Image (cartoon, rainbow, N blue to C red):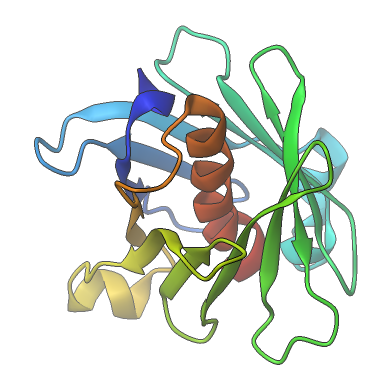
Amino acid sequence: MLLGRTRYFVKEHVGVLKLTDTYDILDPETRQQVGSARDQPSGWAKFARLLLKKQFLPTTINVYESESSPPVLSIRKRPGFFRASVVVADATHAVLGRLQQKLLSLGGGRLVIDTTGKQVANITGDWKGWNFRFLDDAGVELGVVTKTWAGAGKELFTTADNYMIALSPGSDGTPHRAALLLAAGLAIDTVFKER
């Protein structure tokens, strides 16, 4: 079960002049594929990427356990020029929470908010690089996102990223919490950092 895990290795597919992104979600120990994530914007938004930066356009990133199954998780980004608004929903389209950009944050910090409006995590880290931490209100680490080196050729000549999302053993490992933190980890690349 994809959302019952605590560690995910995310590998972006390499492509030339691609308008959408696809990611393999792998078990970090076995490197076996346990899911995938696909950037699936509406038709007009997909082709608008030829003229505008994709950060300004709406998109949906669907997370699948297998190619033949419906999405188990959807990350929907609304259009925005200054602050991205991201909603996370489960397979039944029930909203699990949202990602909210902090106001006046020098590092571009994000908050993970549940459906009751309660802050689940604060995402901190180096927004120029690729090391992020999910912290609760008390400063306890709930998980991390770290970029992994893909080799000089891939790093220099493509925008494809490989990274690890790891939830801390002491964090609430429920599928709901795992889904929100997995969505936050994916959104760092697919919504906030992708160029």
